Length: 211
Image 1 (cartoon, rainbow, N blue to C red):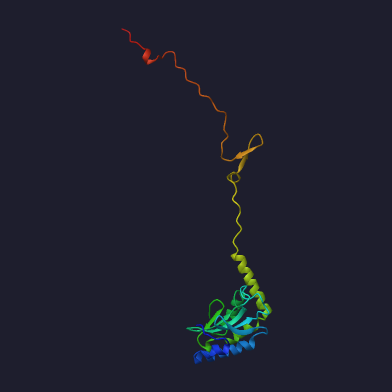
Image 2: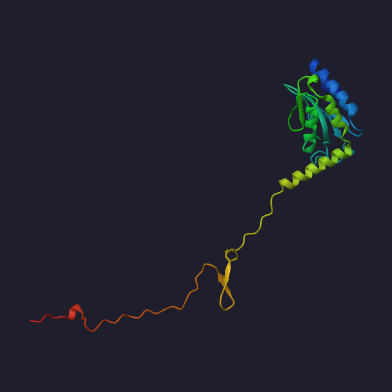
């Protein structure tokens, strides 16, 4: 769900009491674990911790007015969510393993951890992951991911079609030249000669019966 708010405090004030209490505690824990250099604001209708534009002017996906998001908190229709932009690939595998060791069930989509109650969330593991990502390390991973996607989305180079003659392998002539394979060499043209009639046969029109 999207809430109209310009600060984290405004966002939380609009939530039902249980959701407000849970996300307040998650916010406090994340802020305590957050490495220096990130900034809290509302982005895409969520409480988000971003890399400030002053630190990374290029912005998110090349948009100079949108800071790169690191982690977001949100109250959705059927659950609460933590969006961790640093947890994918090998990092996700490691995160899932550590989370499983807590004995709590992980409900996770692409970079998104879903939970319905605070006691169902392994908040210590979330904070442990947050602490591991100083701004420089996160930006390096972000840029590597962008570069990888760019290479995959680039259209393959197409070769110019070759002429039909170039596509047919050639075979050498006796004189040193070549001709396309599969094409028979033409021999000398033979002239047709008329057949001679035998002397014992005569034309029907010239035959006569003897009495």
